[in-house]
Length: 161
Ligand SMILES: CC(C)(COP(=O)(O)OP(=O)(O)OC[C@H]1O[C@@H](n2cnc3c(N)ncnc32)[C@H](O)[C@@H]1OP(=O)(O)O)[C@@H](O)C(=O)NCCC(=O)NCCS
Image (cartoon, rainbow, N blue to C red; front, side, top):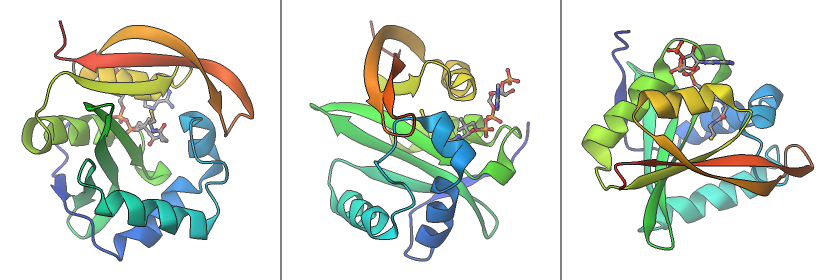
């Protein structure tokens, strides 16, 4: 699906839009592994200030023209790169996540193996990852703030053994 998407570095004014996307109740339920209170603006700002300053975090905004559609982020867990993403609900189901992830993996962070995680019942995210070549390598249980309980989580890898 042609998207005319671009990835660009984050600027301060993107944060309002990203905060709005990340406050959406349906998105929060889906992502499951969120902060304790995603609607806490101070907490959001503190987190983004920290990750923007971190040398082991790479953030890109997904844009179409002037419009911000979401974000893709890679970070490191014990030295290994891992990826995550979030699309505004009004843009779901148009192939945005798949195309943005592909672009990020081809042009922004080409380290492999690249890891990812998602709630086992987040079928949309699992599908996005599989379409980009990730394979499920493990299952785990983790406490999901958005669900207030432990749930099944999938661990995925791209370009591993
Ligand atoms: C998960 C998310 C990134 C998907 O974004 P998107 O732009 O709608 O994804 P795409 O349009 O690229 O869709 C990719 C695939 O998922 C499928 N899909 C999308 N939404 C779906 C849904 N709600 N249920 C089932 N499948 C879905 C699409 O049909 C497509 O598969 P196909 O090509 O085989 O038809 C988006 O819903 C989101 O940001 N959710 C909240 C945050 C989140 O969960 N982030 C991931 C944390 S691991």
